Image (cartoon, rainbow, N blue to C red):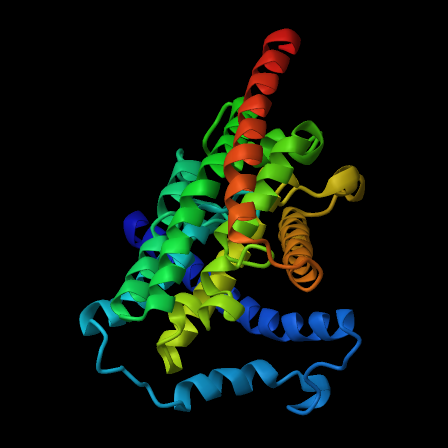
Length: 348
């Protein structure tokens, strides 16, 4: 088989697998969100649709499909339709460079093939994620503005100012990780944590990144762009049916990507802790499966943490949100970069 065609098939298979994994995880998250919140609030949660409410995500998806797709007469129709697409597509694209396993060499089609467990192994993977993730805010702003509703517009403006405030400390927290690994390639950052995870070497950067991730994904306690008490529903007030579903899908997709990126940068990625793989000395295929399982478990824990915090902490006021980003996280991120630079200069 032609090597170009073979590589194209491998990439397409990885894209399909990743997309299916993201959408299945989103379905699971919609159920987990309700069950965890029910447990925290001492109530049952969904228990009517299927055994233990397990079919609730299917019922939700069907509801979105069959609901009437209303386009209000007062909206800017073209931009109103474009908004949900602009926020969903970047949310799905950002996962492309995250490695969920180590690379292996195997024979396919009679030739030796290098299979990497990520859709695209870019040398500038960190920059790709920051660039694509920042595009999602355009969907929020355009959707809010095109709705021709003052509450929706206010939600879009809040989302843009929130993104500016927290993308800077988030990017600076990643700089300290890049300084230690000496690479912008995510696979190199994972390999650099083989002996010691970055959460131990860079605890301050981890906290800054985690808080910024909550703000980036518009999750409580930083969900000001859609605060129901103030803005009815925020930027998606005028949306219904699958357009509204696109906003929800993008929120959960961003949640998955943020959790996976946190695992990659600070929790060793697919690395299995405590030298378990070296002790077991398993065949290469089993090692890969365990590494992927390790990545999935770590990402699942971070997703649980996002849900836990949402149903535990109250919403910040808007001025508190801005003060935290500009007056606390930004100086701390700069201090951490200086501290990292001094550590590298002294101990290297």
